Image (cartoon, rainbow, N blue to C red; front, side, top):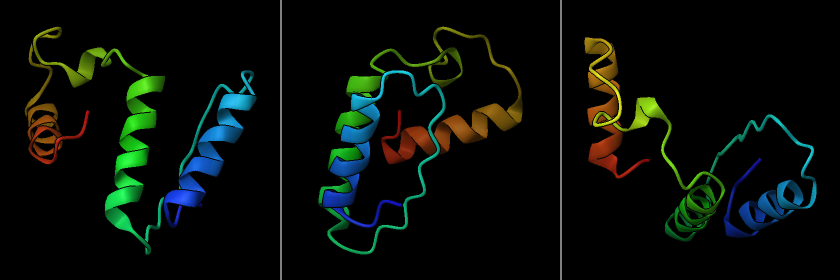
Length: 81
């Protein structure tokens, strides 16, 4: 569980140290230093998955559905990748 920047760094270091991990579930219940935690999470996500998946980049994929559009606009509005 990620509650703060230290938890985030520990979780990401563990994943980085275990290359055979093929599935990651991240429970983020951030209650301390949310801005710093968010920054660390975004930086790691950007390093780990630097190329957006097709469903994250509407220029790469034709419009899939209105539901997709709604989700993408919400993510883009918040700066999520």
